[in-house]
Length: 169
Ligand SMILES: [Zn+2]
Image (tube, rainbow, N blue to C red; front, top):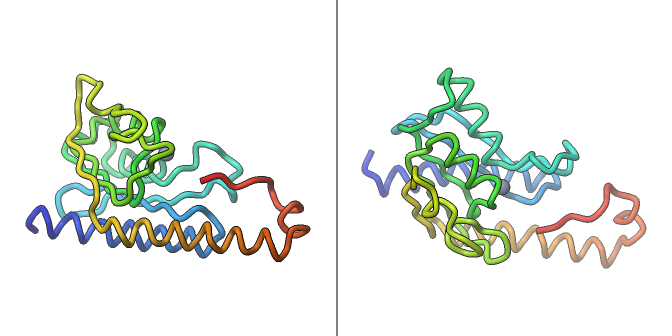
């Protein structure tokens, strides 16, 4: 597959996982680790269900890829994620020696691949970073999620406060 086609194909798979998260009431972020044209790890946000701050999409995808490939060095693998990785996930990608990070929507509040900081560029490993792949679709699913959330908070405040706390973007 050509690089542009692969970026789009893999991002579509990451978007499918983000939609799964959405349907589960999680902030919709999905991630894929690929070795060439083969997906070797999939992940999606599960923070609410797992009640775990570490349950980000990228961590799950990297974890699966390490298990599957039987090693922690993913230096021939690329990470695709619908939202710009946070500092934790950009750090995990660097630690896994990921070859390149490809993301969809930018995260002005918490993105560590150019927004609030540029973590990959600050490391000796320096994975390549490409942003803006299927950006509109990746951003739209997040916008829709937070629109629904605001609506639910407005119409069912009691149901909301009874739930497991506050969801942050
Ligand atoms: Zn993260």
